[in-house]
Length: 185
View 1: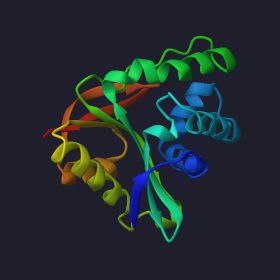
View 2 (view 1 turned 90 degrees about the vertical axis):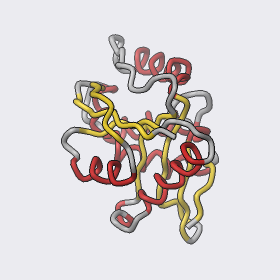
View 3 (view 1 turned 120 degrees about the vertical axis):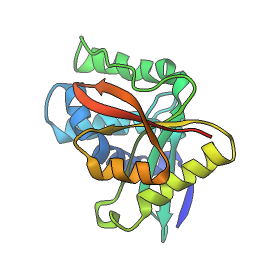
């Protein structure tokens, strides 16, 4: 498996992976459970530049020249700048009252979301993506990694704890109760 920086050509695969992780939250963003609208919104931002979901902030896992997993990560201190185009677009097209909570903070590189092709889940792709990010950010560059995990997803939390993340608090995003986990150098 190869893990590499994403390109715009990877956007459709990335959007599919991120959708798996964000489906409920995307529906709250657009105000309805409409998979096509939610996917189109996500793809619009993944293909674009200068926003939190952009391919510019993604790494992909590739197996036999197929994108099998994606991870979206950025400097938490840049959240406001990266989120601004997303908030503006959602307010003008879907929900004029859209005002999401801060999901990350300065001082951590934030794993916004990641996903793996359904037919590749359980084969270690997600673990390899996470381990790659841990090696690059924590081990090589002495950075702190952060992520949120749904309180209703004990299997994901178990994986993160096994890899060395620690619970540092709780957050709410789009009315979902989440635990904030970090890994420090």
